[in-house]
Length: 313
Image (cartoon, rainbow, N blue to C red; front, side, top):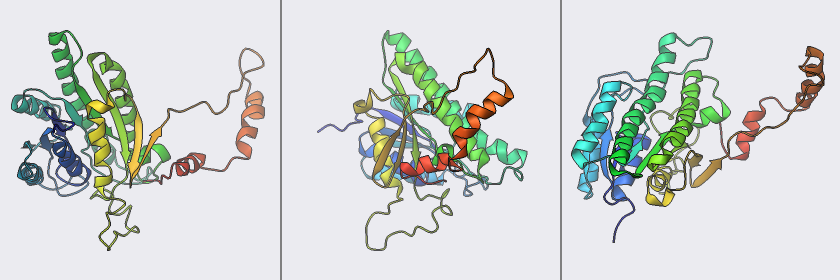
């Protein structure tokens, strides 16, 4: 009996721990050969000595279960290391079919206290890291499509966050990077559709090294039940989006956690006002717009997020 991802190869970044590890294991379980990428630094802020051990351990887990995997120690925020990552997949497995971008760090601080380095480092790892791997994967697929004269198989699954959807006061760098990843994904989806490639983005909620303090008040069940915040609730959606079954899903944003998937629509116009003359005056804008907000609760975007069963973070 064939598996959904039989004959396909995948890269998962940040796959040495947490969400990335669960996603790499799931792709392998579904039949994909996996390049397990992780820079291996122990600190969630990107601090500490880089180590191949986390990636190698996950690759060994996959091989012990009968799958195919190779480890890659590399910093995806470095353009040339991202190139080497994609080249490793192509050299090892003949081609690349699936790219899952998950690598990231946190350097939390309120906007008035954040340093330039804290801003730059998070934007670099999350947003530039997603761009780097996507750039080289996209060039690979475009080249293959031109050579074959038709569409090829390609899947990109990027990782955003509810911090982009609902805000996160102490994470302006992280929220901005995650919002940028959504824009990167929708642009990529439009650019690569003609080559047969889809690009989608997920907002996962899971208990990992990066979110251990966010979910500190939500204890893991002690009766053997799967933790509602386990990364294993997220990885099946990644496996599905990477599969042929998701061929018609492109440029979409999906929130996933604890047995729930929500498909998020693009923003809609909530209200529209027209100037009485050629352009607005200050008084006219005040008369039209101020009453619209007068009776609305503050932080209405947060209330909208709650409708989806989401929370900030």
